[in-house]
Length: 416
Image 1 (tube, rainbow, N blue to C red):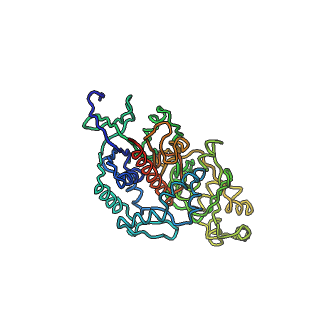
Image 2 (tube, one colour):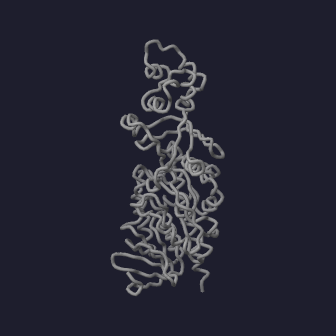
Image 3 (cartoon, helix red, strand yellow):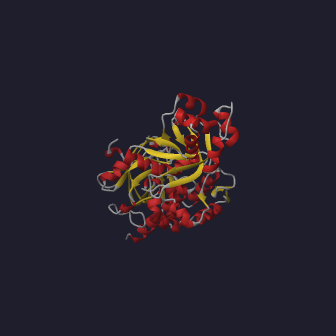
């Protein structure tokens, strides 16, 4: 489609991307009196938001703010500024104003009372439409033309939009089928924006399991267990659970360690972690119980009766230890408390829950406007930050959307 055949439009405020960050930016702009039109390549907005909420929408987390902010690692100082615009409690209050009450689960995570994402999204979209936000779906953004106009493509043809201000909230590169494909990355780089390569975050890792383990134990949870990894600063140590998959390991505990493991693999070619399979028992007790005479019983029966160790945990010991180590009580006891496991590659970015990399925060001012493109703001997962699951991803995405929306509204106010 050539530019000659395209339709040209001039708009005061454009938001590109209909995820939580984009919707929040649109809300702030509309509440400030701006005429807002939102464009998205998908047939409907919030598709990743809805899928993430199928198992219970984890809106935010209830832990104290200093601990909350620490979850963002190297980007904690910048995210802390976003949280001043939309704190975890403010996000709960915002949901309540939409008629969605929340509760704190046993893990400290915050959920809607009905655990569902769809009612919140419906109420949100209703309010946005009441405030005049116009939605354009199936409009794929293609960057800028030579004159600086935003380019879109759809089944109806090409479109050029000149906007007084634009907020980009295009997501990262995970779950491409839901619209986050990272296609924007080269267009921003061509414009001189400093962008970091997109990498998987909160994803699994590959391990070449034996066919026996894959067939018998893929899908099995390993819990409770303590995962330790010394190859980062500070060293990672946390108790939780993960899942054996046919390709390796995945699940909440693995996701919590994924950034450190991924970085170590990029640096060293692999990452070696250890698993404490029996965190409730100290090392002395494990040594004593393993060394207890077992008579004619098999090793599996012995460990099950003395330590309750069985199933997938027992399968892991057989998978990862040599026969000589299994037969040596001292070596076996040591392995139960610190079973070594080496991962060599993260799973592909499209399988990850989220992605790292994107627009470096140094390329943005405090209002999240691109320094090299005045009037263009960025928000959400397309920014170079990452966090574990547990409400931290959604909280920071929506908070950054509010900051970008406030910045865009201020930019409109400064223009003659």
